[in-house]
Length: 149
Image 1 (cartoon, rainbow, N blue to C red):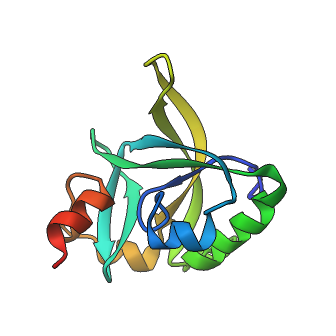
Image 2: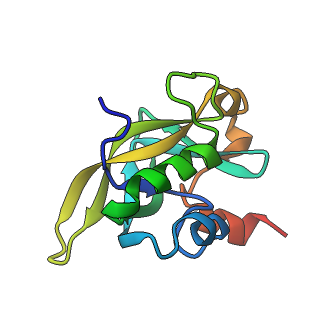
């Protein structure tokens, strides 16, 4: 699998539309953005930041599909990799960029699946996983509204 394959990026935390890292890294560089979910995944929080990992249940993570403008794709993906601390073939990275299937509702109301890049929690994040750090709604924006002072 090519680590430069030009897939949309599924974002679920501070990179979601309108959030601080969206403004810093994605604003003005996207062709389109679509609300979506990441089935069979759970969201957790470590050091006040979200991370996701695969789940063996019906859990899903809420987020956005980000379709980066083709002319800016390589630069944007490199910026996102740096933001997430991702290094190819480095399992100790805070986040790992992996290929996963997300789903969204198209204009006709049908559910569609699409392959995406997703930043999963790396070993450091996974070591903090507990029921106390689990975001049951799978939605970072809901979590921020209801859990933060």
